Length: 138
Image (tube, rainbow, N blue to C red):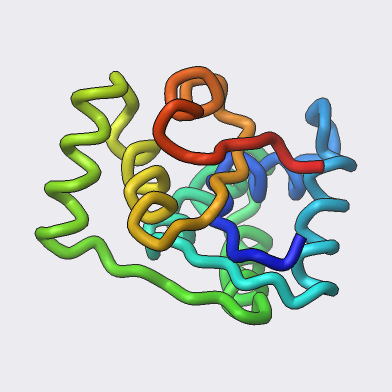
């Protein structure tokens, strides 16, 4: 795999939650993306989503904030701001595919930039394959 990917926050949270099922697979996937220098195109939303989830799950503010700084060092990371145009596109995706707002933003980024969406989110995996390439980490 060398083509660009968009990685849902669910994969990052799972990778950094060793007590969760699939954590090893998610961590392996992220290390492979990092080691192979695969381009990662992410909405800026992914930082607060991952940090908030890790802080809540582990009850550790400092660990969560340190993780945010580490995520910014991901090689070949491109961050996409949520401007009005992308928000409109994400809203359309959310309405058509009955997704939560944040999930539709990842889908909009993946569609706009032609990336594969990597996720553990069941709704994204179920509802998006007709419009974009969506897979679990492996």
